[in-house]
Image (cartoon, rainbow, N blue to C red; front, side):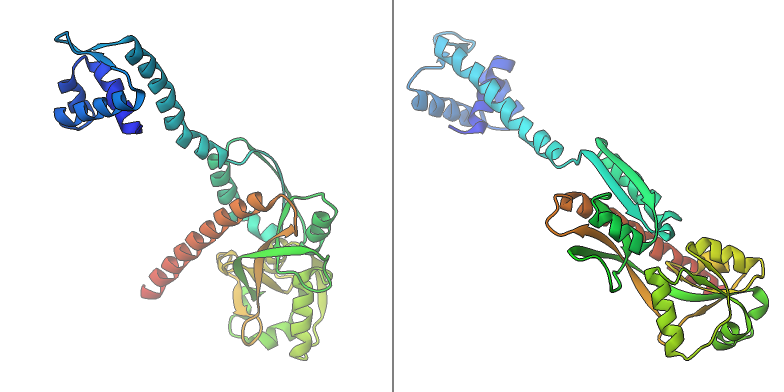
Length: 306
């Protein structure tokens, strides 16, 4: 028995003739007749009373037609059920570093929510090290952090999302100075030294044998950029794009040679049932990051051609 033969049987009952049924299912009239005979052989029963000009269902034919409707409805509903089964539902506790809140995360979460309307997303922010601890303590399901820097909680699994470069940001009047001179002449508005980004910056400063005058210590890169914009010192910050600084007229130079960078990753605990959530979040963020990068590349290319 084939599903196509059952559809043909239903079409005959709906349209009242083999000819119109053939047109409805895109077959020839002879092919329709062949399918009906196949069904009759399988069930060892006549499905139509052929003594009438208009095909009339026999009692056996009425039973088969009723079951055909049920079978086809079940089969046709499979696709919808499979699509629905792939939708995520429930609560997702998501922690994220503050730099991703500027534009990437809101866009990614909006797309995720549209695809999975039954998913309730609870979002909180923090430093990478803090988020990793909260993840270990089961206060979060997944966390968007920078690539773990030792020491960090064990049993964490990370998936790369995108990269952020480290930049020295300084007041506009520092435009003619090199990176080393800026860091020696301006008070450093430094990233929290206990954060993973802060540890990376400290190691690079030691590598360059640079002694800096610490002016402030903050845990928010946008706050650091704002402080620099007010002429309170220079900062070293990881940015997805230097636009955050250059759009405010600040001097922006690569930090490190080669320029230091960090990976932004999605963290989860090994063996936890949040894998499906993490994969969905990672996919949306990666797509958003790629679009943002392409957009900024086009803008930079346009400015270069002006």
